[in-house]
Amino acid sequence: MNGYVGKLLYVDLGSGEIRDEPLDPEMARTYVGGSGLAARLAYDIVGDLTDPLGPENPLMVMTGPLVGTAMPSAGRCSFCALAPLTGIWGESNTGGFIGPELRFTGYDGLVITGRSERPVMLAVVDGEASLVDGTGLWGLDAYETQDCARRILDEPRARVACIGKAGENGVKMAAVMNDHGRAAGRTGMGAVMGTKNLKAIALRGGEDVPLADPEGFALVVREILGDLEEDMVATALRMAGTAGYVDMALMYGDMPIGYFQRGEWEPASQLSGVRMAEEYQKRIRACYRCPIACGRETHAPEYDLERVDGPEYESVAALGSLLMVDDLEGVIYAGHLCNVYGIDTISTGCTIALACEMFDRGVLTLEDTGGLAIHYGDVEMIHRLIEMLVHRQGFGDILAEGSVALAERFGVPELAATVNRLEVPMHDPRAFSGMAVTYALSPRGACHMQGDMYGVDTGQGPAVELDIVPGNRFEDSEEKGRIAARQHAWRSLYNAWTLCQFQNPGVERLLRAVNTATGWDLRIDDLLVLGKRLVALKRVLNFKLGLRIEDDRLPGLLLHPLDEGGTEGHVPDVDALLAGAYDELGWDPRSGKPTRSTLDALDLGFVLE
Image (cartoon, rainbow, N blue to C red; front, top):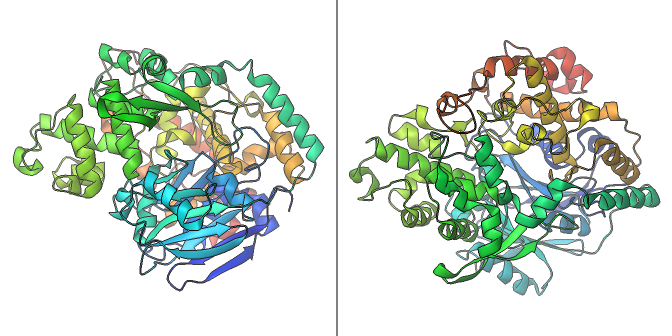
């Protein structure tokens, strides 16, 4: 199988059984890889009675046909399962080196079921898989675990994915950490590992990924690398990291302030990536074969930290402007705590911001919080709440369940800034209307990586061959909804290849890269079909799990106009946008389900059974 190693590793933690299974070539071509292939495998395993924290919930680690090749920025992989935080399909994408290393061990993916009676580490070294006693790892933080796992295996160059205290304690937004501070952050995949008593996955191998046309593949890779020097977006990311977007985001009104309720706040400019680069940056870091190198390594001398991974834009906003904190060093330290304990910065920041709002409104009292006064702008309190949340101490035990659980417990569900129980990321749909479609239809809940319309409408890598073109960011037409749906399908395909979304070399070159890697004969017209198939598959899987069209909505906080700032008082017309998206995707506008004809056209007729 060119472009694939051709094997999946199945591990039952309950029985200890480990076995290889061949990867079906037809299934690989139909669902590609990454979260797409994982969703197809999950469809036959899970149902509405599957407990996300039960042993029957499969944890899948999946790569795609470009991962581990010379393709720039193809160093990612997906961690997938039913999500503890949301109860629906969960997928979390991470960079670093863990995805390529999985391929080098001789596998395209892992499917892990069951629950071990004691902590274990799954080790795959040179094609040999084993379960190693992980008792000595339990209780270690994410950084200590990575170092200790390598020592246990006597493999100093092994790549390790692991959980910290948050995953061990079943915190619903726990992340899977890898390659120092890289994270599969969203939806609670770390809690899935924790409930399985799976502390770590360690990988080391030396196999190559077979290519159908090595010379043709090398040629397109050289073309992509050659054009990167003139790519303004890539240059900006290399210079200031993703936090370099802060100033632009503030201008557009895209960066949330004060729990999505303020349009302007001048101190937010103190959080800029330019300032971080000038005052706190030690060096830049890159994922596997990535020439962009958007990662940052910083330091926080006030906290006696000589090395901190990050933070990137989402963390700066979620732990900074969202909480009305302009202390950049304090935000760096908050992000460090999240890395150490293995927890998603977006959900953490949103949940703490909700607590601030509830306390200010009098919904929460000192009696509820154990005597803690929780206010916006108190960075020391934020650090303390992260510690309490991770260890489920006192009021932190409530925070550990996420925003919806917190809001519902105190009778204010309307204050939860979530879609399908997943906290909204740091891009405001009032600034870019197309994001309303992205959030409402994302298969994992609110997610900016399922269709980055803020990127499309600012001209960052539009796919014009697929009719994904920049436009008026405030446009609320059905056509804008169709464009957002096409971008959703396109990024779903990215997450199956699986390719970093900062790498936008153009549709034609990506098509050549995939075809020369796999030997397929895909045409441009096939790409959106592939993407829409993956979107539809995850849609029917979520409907199988209980999702309904009524869940295609935005939280009320994001439907109130802001009187100041870059959104100019605009609120997206969600109904008009979704009408266009449903039409583009071939979904029934009354039920929200893909129609029978759509399922047949996408070769998904099996779900009708």
